[in-house]
Image (cartoon, rainbow, N blue to C red; front, side, top):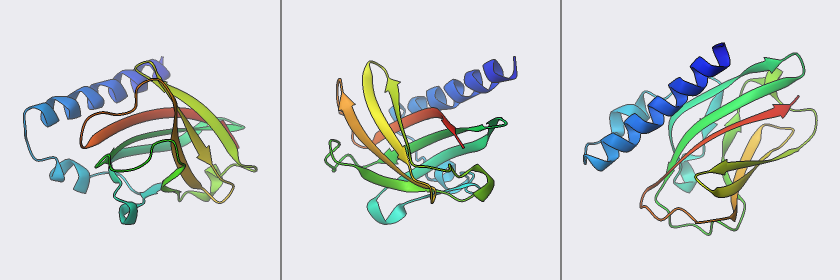
Length: 142
């Protein structure tokens, strides 16, 4: 029940962001208000964070949800550092490689033992918009 509510909330946020983007409004206020208590985005590489959610899922796993933006001037086939999980109780005991699907395209997120997170494109259609907004939701073993 709670998982369905969280999933619906996540999708509503994505739809709102996409609506705002298409309406030509400035998203800087949303980016400035992003929750960075458990995840810090790599601003130096051009990534922006709309929001993050890092929380326990079960006793041995966690959930990571991110809504990221990039100017889409990167090679999506190369591993890109997007940021770091800052909340040490939710760091994995080993590196995790997780595939997630987004509108028929597959991406891989790599979560290192130290919390650093990387993303790269696997298959399907690469992001075409500029900037590209990537919502991701994955579960990983601690």
